Length: 270
Image (cartoon, rainbow, N blue to C red; front, side):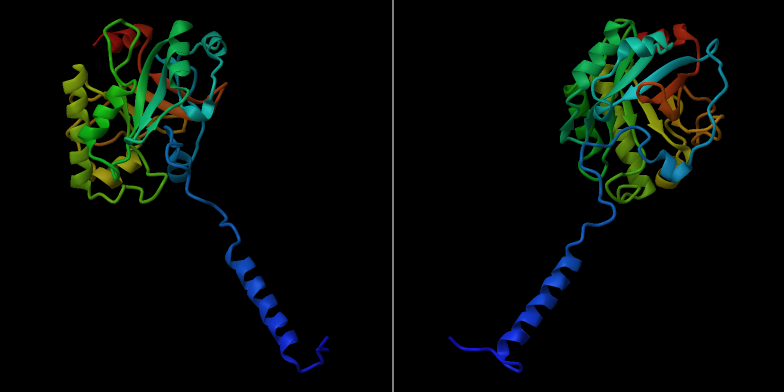
């Protein structure tokens, strides 16, 4: 059996192997943060990072009606607790892009209805994956429809910061406006209703160039975590709904409807 003495080849090979192993270990260290999984996006996901968080609005239940929005990250929701806390309307995420449906949608959509709430469905837009017409069809075909029963709100388009990449989905302002128009037009053609549009003023200004052409027919759902709603996107002089916090009771995301319960019913009836 050969004996390996200092200066022989084998120790040098072991040393080189050790250095290579150390280099590979450093190379494959997990990144500090990874992009979220497709399908995991939800309303207000980027609000705190881009717009920050302020206070919460003063109690104005006489003229505003409490609501919530939920998605798969809330899972099974305690709807009776929310009802007892004064929540009277809710939106549940139905779809994202043309590749995702919320596995909790039926529980959330039907559960809110069962306790007496007026409810609706929303779609998280991904304008970089497919066009607006195609995504509107996908939404309507997977829970985003509407019926005039006094308990179903028109579908909502959640258009905000891209959690998976470029904030404006790689689109120019004019291309973004076209995408949104295509979605809204197709939703109207399929359901007979104008969809609600959820967004944040800062995103709208940056990604649509402050476009003001949707306000006449499109109810605005504004995202701002503060004690006041602040400046609205171009074209809108008032809002219909306001997502004011992501740290509210039971589900986190809480909203105010700009009107008493009879106005929520009126929106449901069209």
